[in-house]
Length: 161
Image (cartoon, rainbow, N blue to C red; front, side, top):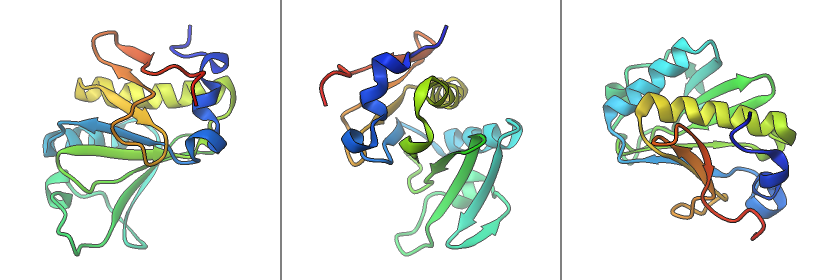
């Protein structure tokens, strides 16, 4: 049975209510956590590319990517956990794993399941909670991975926009 059902969470997947790129994050991260995420991406069978600025490069060790100097090129790791679904990881801080996903690519139960599978994989690998909030709403999680329950859980009422 899925962790979350579309009918229960469809408001959290509505780009008109949540913004099209909700924020996902893991607090209390370390460079070792980022390396674990990089290792997961490389070993998962997902399609991915790593970019510095506009140039695709091989994925370096996390210790070479982080911490980022303020004037450094933006780096991002694009991951496609399923065809047509792109997750963008933003290695900007060694202490927080940040990523986003386009809600327009996650409609219906298949979209919810794809997001849950990806978020659970990150959370399980790190053994830490993973949170999702509306675009630009860090600190106000709507749903996330709970490592104690080993599943995705609601953290807010999906009926309240």
